[in-house]
Length: 192
Image 1: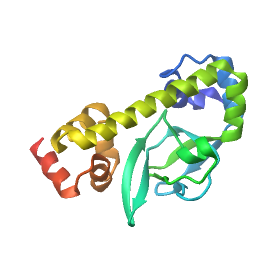
Image 2 (image 1 turned 180 degrees about the vertical axis):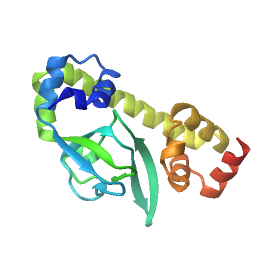
Image 3 (image 1 turned 135 degrees about the vertical axis):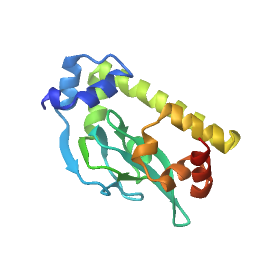
């Protein structure tokens, strides 16, 4: 793999842990490049997907279904990874769907290969531990905020922490992520 084509992925990895070039080469040697169009469903809930996807270019959302309604649970962008949690941790079909909201350039690695690298490369193993800790903390904070913060504060927090979401995702997806109706979010946006 040509590392010069993976600048966002390298930056995303190193924001969590200072992985050396040689360790990145090991990781990248297992990856397969994918270029997929907007609206492509990368991961299907209920279907086992044994890959972790690194995003070099593009934007996507993770969602689950509740009584036929799509509930957005996460947004991913350049430098991020995306995967189905039950697939990764328990080798069982996950509940998440991942939809590409833009044309995407992704690099996929099989979960089995990633786990093998974790066993033999301490830098990649430490990166994996740290990124999962940080994502778990973010999900916990997001969950607590949805329960306790007023809608306006949740929206303002999104503007501070993930301002690109406002320009890259549809209003309904953002409202779902924030736990409010699109109409309420529209009112909040007009007040800002």
